[in-house]
Length: 123
Image (cartoon, rainbow, N blue to C red; front, side):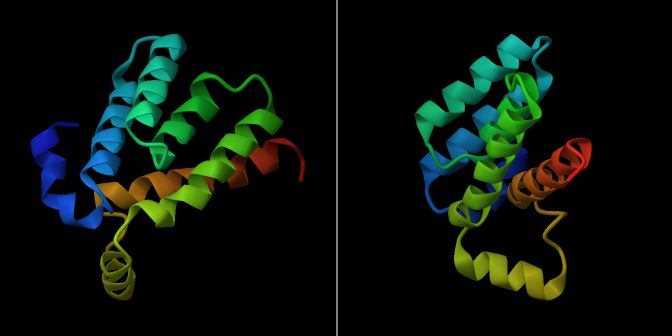
């Protein structure tokens, strides 16, 4: 994702570092190998530990078991609401447009990852 296309959401993030980490984590989706994707995710976490997208990437690129992936997705789901400005989240939930806002997709991907991983585990 181009930085310019997400900069319109800068006010949604709790800090510039969190936004920079999010952008770095999004780069992982264009990496040709899981190892490179994991490296991009770790680089994002070095910028800010509040990066749910990085944990989503690690769940796919680095987890060696369903249990490990589930833990990574759960971490991402817990972090999701923490990286966003509360007033922005409340407004977007009220008008039903959270999926159309790129910063909020990490949380939804995490929730899907939790549910899908539990399904794969037969739980």
